Image (cartoon, rainbow, N blue to C red; front, side):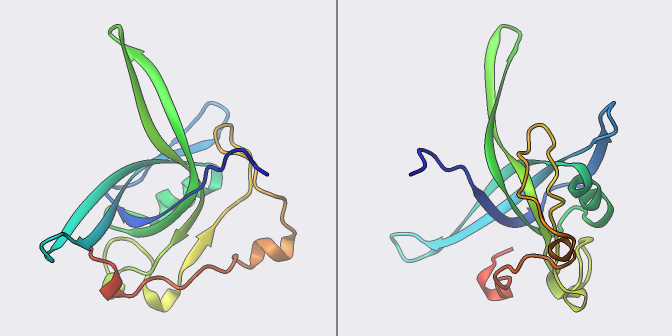
Length: 164
């Protein structure tokens, strides 16, 4: 039995445009901000909205695809793992919990327009290049047939289920 499990699945909207940078090795890296909304009833029976902001790092071709097709407000599903970054600034220790994105799925945008996401008529686009990019662990090897067919995913929530 595994002693630990580190897996995160998030569905939300980008808080800013994607900026892709390249390491000296030529590897693409993108830092994303994702807003994930949660809506529930409080003890008084009133609907309360809570937004969680999550920093995400994408590597390789996935980062390039994000930079090409996504912009502020785009709905996107990210699957990855948590990573704790620690550093010291002016003698003070600092840390930040973020997500290393290993798989990205572009979700149809609201009303089929705006936000830079793919419209519903174009379908949802999934991307996972299975590469090993330092911080992102290697995905299992996939055959050419598997790479050309995106893995099946649950259908996206309806507009009534997502309070964006």
